[in-house]
Amino acid sequence: MFFVRTAGEQDLEKVRALLGETWHATYDRLYGADKVNELHASWHSPASLKARLARKNSEFLVADDGKAIGGMGYAAMSTEMTKTVMLYMLYVSPRHQRQGIGRDIFAELETCFPDAEIMRLEVDPQNEPAIAFYKAHGFVEVSRTENCGNAQSGIPALVFEKRLVGDSIQL
Image 1 (cartoon, rainbow, N blue to C red):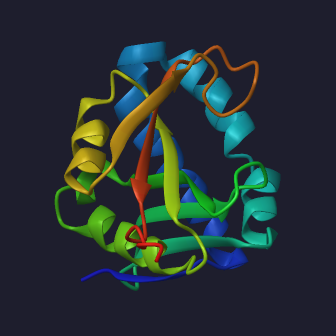
Image 2 (image 1 turned 30 degrees about the vertical axis):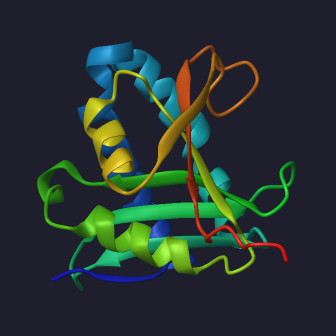
């Protein structure tokens, strides 16, 4: 059984391995192994993961069964949009998918930002399992971008949002 907890520096090597495995299983067919290796080396470098772990107004979670890290999630308050939390990463290792790990990590991340009203994410338009997961958890597509992750990535993405708090009625 996996338990969701806050990640620590001691987890980063296992998290990086999980990300490499998950990215290759998901994106090799879309971008090719060489491009996935390039993106993984850049976006999931030890320094990049360590910086995320240290970032203020963020939450870095892992699903841990005492032997392995089965999934991870990372979200942070947006620096550009008020009351918006960005879900940057939610990945479950291929051998542990469909066991509720992604759901459990996501549920925890939703509670970590009490001042946020919206959760926002980017997802590859061809990643149908991820799109189905996010829609099942209340996300709706609000726009598209041609540069997922950074301004020059050249990787298209759908932008999804979920309202985290109910609309209040003004009297």
